[in-house]
Length: 582
Image (cartoon, rainbow, N blue to C red):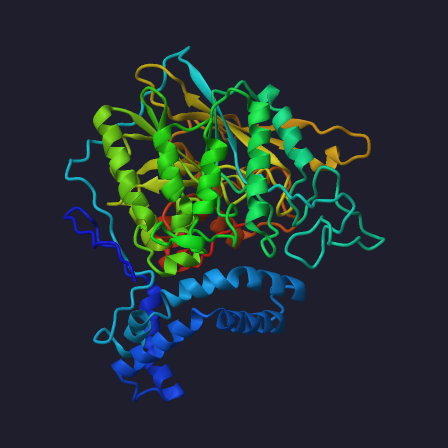
């Protein structure tokens, strides 16, 4: 099994140990007694798992594993039988390969079962990247731009989720994971079918709604550039083919280019771009299992927007860096290498593709030049695997003076994540903006975001000055004979009474919402793009939602300790898991 070299640096802070291996090592001795493998020796164990590995290389045995999984899926009623069968057939080959090279490898399995003398279990173990020995400059908050200084308008698109099979009138509440489409069937006579422009349910968007969005951008523009953070295909993850994914990529890219014209567009890779969904093997996985088919297609589709060096790293690992303006560096991360759902990381989750170490190099070079940096990506860092998230958090803290903005999507709702100094977890030093989705999935209005950013001039801070969110009100748009009207939902500073859009303002907003129910209800309404659920958000829901805004680092309940009356850590720990719609 391939491993990255161990990273050792005096400045690398040790991370708290992951919980799962410790729990497994505690449970395994009890399982030995239950299943009677107390006499299992190391050579026999490694021989057994070598045979299992060789057996799983054979296609009939992969099919047998899939057959068992289908039976379990049906028995547990995880999904309708047709969905169980389709999704397991889609996943079985890649999943078995990943498990064969990780959990079921002789070293991993026997290290877990018999201890470190027989192998080494390090699935999702803690790790650290190396930071340069260059001392961190003293924190220097950005100066407000001078009156009349140029302001850039950046269009932000995320989670478009085009459903090729969307069909007006179909059942929006079907048994499948995605509805409003061919195969969903007609709704009961007493219930309305899917609307023409979209539906408040577990449905994605027809192409005409995306065309309406892009053709109706005029009042929100003009734009200096576009950040587009992925998730192009629909949520019909149980029967997607590579051809389906490439059709979505090329169709929607052509649509964006048609309506944005000469405006530069900078994309990032979403978790739904691949098939199976979330399947993003690191570059050391080669052949048909690799992501080469996807990255090569992206490089071809996005070539008009990206320079040669960006296309080179995109083809390798789905990430890149470039300079939109003098003094500004844009870094597009492949956040699938931090994803809890990316089963390929079972093989090796230590800085997949070396992306974080590469990020450190880009940030250090920008600091040396005096440039500012924007980071874009799909999955927000607070939703990542723990070691990846904690390392990213440390990188952001080290380069707080260089980093001017972080922009993500994925959750489909309108939120943010505040980052703090690692020493006290009390000084806000960065904020990541999580923009709402274009798709309605689940039960939302379609939407998009526009950021106002300190503009292109010498000495610009390139920080976010404000942001605006636009929506299509589906209730109005789906009235027979009506035309779609994309409207401004709100401006952040005006609505929330913010002095600016810097990290401390967002930190203060969270604590204002803790005590001001009316302010929180405004946030809750906008969080759902103007279509909140009918169930009220009680105290546990409110605290969980506010905690998520403070949590730029995964599995770190200490970040929320002041939200809970008395600062009780056990209560704060109870605020996880965080809300997620995608």
